[in-house]
Length: 462
Image 1 (cartoon, rainbow, N blue to C red):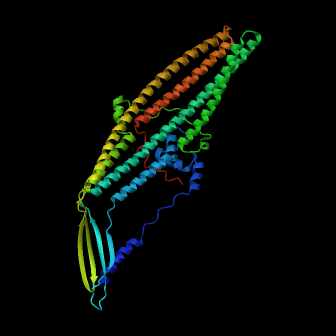
Image 2 (image 1 turned 120 degrees about the vertical axis):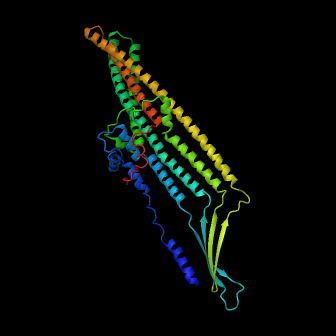
Image 3 (image 1 turned 180 degrees about the vertical axis):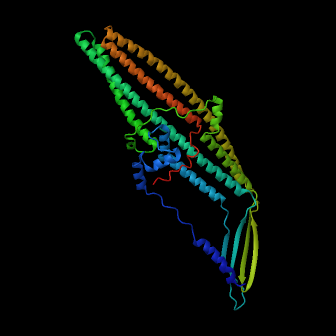
């Protein structure tokens, strides 16, 4: 067998493998195009319509909280970041699943003690094949899959955060709207009362101090009305940010009022805590982190068992075909990987502590949310009771006015009290709805199609 017959096929194999690289990945979108897309986003986007049909089954006729939540899942950049991180983690799983490629070495040899008339050069080729004997690769695969699961759960964590921010922003819009209406009524009543007192002052039936106090109250009502308008504008901007769209995208859109969120199961607090701790994304993420550190520890322990390298080789030495086979492995002479094993053990202990801390924090958050909701229910019941009493008094004043037993000052005062009660009731209702939503966020009992959210990548986006 000639060296040509040996070396040419090997060279053809090596060059053939190197001559066909995979196609390059697509180029990312230009920054100027990304900016243009951000500024032109709207709730009428065709890609959003397809996204809603794929995940909700239809495009809603009106924008309720659930539909707006899925619009936020489509547009919000934190979801895009989480999905991209999950894709990167899945790519690491692919890397962990790949086997090590063999290594080929080509080199000429030189014989300095050759006989006269004989070529001093002789070609050689050798290979290096990894023969794993330890479960190191399996532990690496387990760790990569645990990391991918952590990244997948990050999508859910981002979704709950976006959903919570959207609910709070919508509650602020509704509260600002109701507060502005109540303050508008208060300001009107204060103006009427001020005008009546000024006429009484001119007739000598009121004091300057009474008129001054009414004027100050009127000024405060007008100032509060202006602040409510500013709060409404800021709440709209916050809603747009929670949706991931510019403020102009909400022009002409009827936003829903406060919502109590999805109906929670009729369970005891202990049962809710147990169910929540099996569903909360942060708890599951901490558990996946623990599994990842466990796999990493197993990988470091597996390194204490050396892998073997098989190296067949060939030399052509002036017509002599010389074959050789080498077997190489690491000798644990100076250490047996004790340092990395100790590090991995410490990281696992840290993950256990973090898992415990996350569960403790989740329990505290749920208990605080339950207490807040209970307090909000008590507050709204009290606000309704006070409002009913004031409304009853206002009706009596109206009857007395019709009989001539009351004057316009008393009527405007009763009107002012009723407007204040309406404002307090509106804020209590908004706080109660927000507290119920916060309890849903704390429990993180999955809402419909939550599991499909990680896979609901908006591929139709430009």
